[in-house]
Length: 266
Image 1 (cartoon, rainbow, N blue to C red):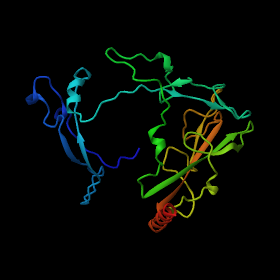
Image 2 (cartoon, one colour; image 1 turned 45 degrees about the vertical axis):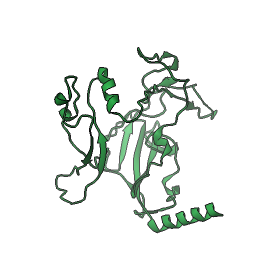
Image 3 (cartoon, rainbow, N blue to C red; image 1 turned 90 degrees about the vertical axis):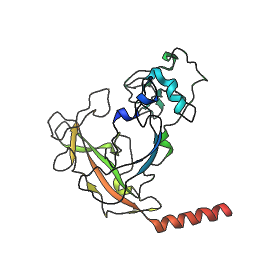
């Protein structure tokens, strides 16, 4: 994760106390403007990375009613569980057959969370039935809000019994191992242009001199759970990350906007 900006505030400044407003932190429940800072020590530029308007309150859960007095909106608490499925290579249908983690789990896929196991806390009750809600991050493109973006794809290989490395059936995947187009077939999206002429291997990670990282697949898993930079004879898989920078094409974006407006009018 890349830290682009930050702001430090002592917790005591937002701390709530039952002993009255004089015992609360000076910024507890108050709307304020915060100017974020650059993380680099040597950055002396005059530009501020971001300005945010926030209302902070820091206290115990038993004092939640006090927090609600500061909140301008209605507080809602949701219970969530993730339904998991896998696709069999030969059949091609989605289902739970061959699933190596719980059918219903938390976001990590590690903790079993059947929907019937949820119970409202004391003083709470369900408002309605369970509903399917997409991940909020899926509602936006991953490059939304960026003027430049690093496209990435992982090249995957498997080791034959004789020690030779060959490309897997899913030769190119994303970070999570989901199949994607080969890097040479990935086209630059409308409104963008390639900044880099060619794809390059990312060696600024824990990888060997050629960009490979190695792992071992233990059935019933279909891919390694962890990766290391040093090759061993017992490793069954290896992968390397290819990257290519693309940048917003402002002229092309304006042209696309005009076409959309014309289409709406017509």
